[in-house]
Image (cartoon, rainbow, N blue to C red; front, side, top):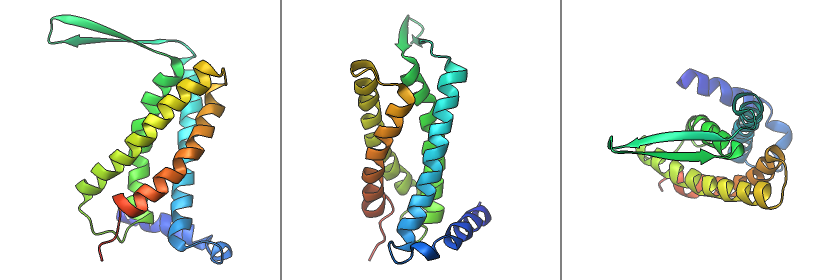
Amino acid sequence: MNRIAQTITKIIDFFYRPFSNWMSEQFFRYAACGGGNLVLDWVLYFFIYNFVIGHDLVYLNLQIFKLSNLQICLTPHIATLCIVFPITLLTGFWLQKYVTFSQSELNSWRQLGRYILIVALNLAINYFGLKLCVETLGWYPTPSKMAITLITVAISYIGQKYFTFRVSK
């Protein structure tokens, strides 16, 4: 895994030179890793929404203590979010930990816990944003997801730099 991270870092750094006057190397790496993960998120969301979920409601039957069943109905855009979220959570953490913020000496489990807190905040913004945009405003799900994601990018960078992967001094 370390070799993969080093290769990704070298590729990103190769493209950094023209941007060196406008942004730090760390921010460029964050943008490249986050941008790659963002594209993965959008592609997975589009593919799963359109070809796996198929615009249908998703019904989940949960058995609680073998006594009763709880049936949950998810709208297709929220069901898709539930499928895509864990995938991009893990790929995003790995990229940020090993490529962008590799100098952080915090314990990996502590980093993961903090990363999950930041992502949970972003998930809440995504959930309520999708509810507002799709169900209240009547916008299409994929563009709504894209617009909401742009808001959460700023929150993520600040949270990751100063909280999740902060460097001890």
